[in-house]
Length: 516
Image (cartoon, rainbow, N blue to C red; front, top):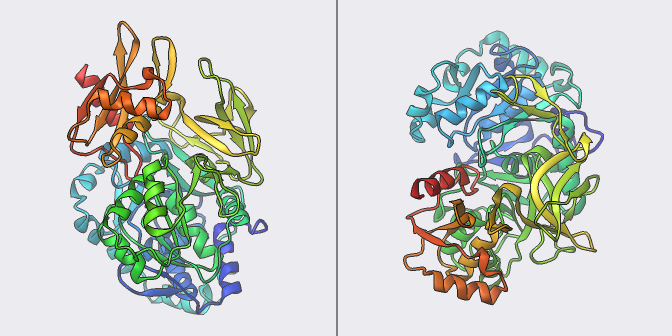
């Protein structure tokens, strides 16, 4: 796959390898689309997209996990228009910030989707952009377009498509905003295809596999691993519109006999909670990412379903996978080994004895950021670089340790450490203590300023009764220092989540400050 030049040419190569008539993608409409049918729809949507933007221009995509989104993504790629995948769960302010950063002027969406997902307020808050509905766009595909499609585009797609280079942008994704305003992450064709090749180098993907993907395509995990990986590997794909349907998803996995499932620890915990004992009998790979995999979640999946969860790690800026455990090479508590072709540098962090701040580079690294505001100008690319390693490297902001065998262990984010009484304390340790004290509840730690101790750790929890004494006892059992035990416990009905499934620490920190 490393010889592929663009995502679209990789799609054409996969179609030639596996056959135009091979049924490939299915969504909630219960229709299976073949390579040929995907190509036909992609070329039609790509031609229509050409009328909304010039070559190299960004088009906002505000759509759920359905086959049409795949078609639109491929079609825009075929004709050199860049899909900016917008997070429809983030609210108007965040979407507006993303559009400003990327220089988006036109947003493609679906009237049916907006109505079903009740996103009317979001659209109302985006009045400064041109909103184009696919239902209206399809009516503009005239008889000349149909002749072009039938006689030329679907017969000679590589000639009908616009020539692109591997370093040209293939997609714009946006950081989750878990630590501030979203940044546009420019992923080239090279980055996306390299990451897919890296994943396939360590995990065996067969044409007989069927992926279940409920992770949204506006998230790198859902786009690269959940969508493009199966399509370009000849494996089938079932697209589900929301990862939050905890009761329905186990039944759908069982019904469609899916063999590969991606999810966050939070999502996997809830799927297990509502699943029947044989709902996951067809699964051969369950891969967790985007947040730390809980010990209780790992244990539940192994004991109830006999399935070992393979934990991985990545960031949007690396398209996204950096490391992953594999069936043949895994280590409990780690996120696996660095993928082939990647380099890592660990920068020491004051106050942290083992490990340090992770910097990475490789063929799957982003082209750069698009930012708005005082840090950058909208639409102007800022190439990757780190103070410690120079240009071409990315500072992940994660504190990690790598053992003698090359397994990567995540200690936490630099910004997710609190300085308590002069010591750097990982908030993830505080969350692990809470999970040990009450594994049935969900917990998240934050911090506030403290005049006497510098900073004070707060625990937000859904547990009905959780006392600090129970946390102290759990810390002793884990061998964790008492200084990591939260000083204040705040009960809430639900831990706020981002659309990607990660904990929304920005909201939690605001809530923590409000309690001060």
